Length: 81
Image (cartoon, rainbow, N blue to C red; front, side, top):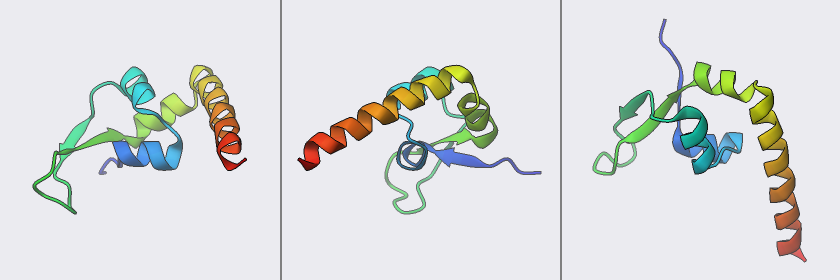
């Protein structure tokens, strides 16, 4: 059984994480992988989806995410004005 992984950029873009929260909650990546789009760039940081989902289900993370999304929405509203 192979484990699923998610890269740092997708955590940010698709799951609303921030770099600070990735460092706080996940720490070091579970794997480093060559970027398939640019093999000469830095290695991609990959995190176990099992670990990501476990953290996302904690009350502490959900409280942070709720606060973060409200702040993000408020800032986007200000920019559109």
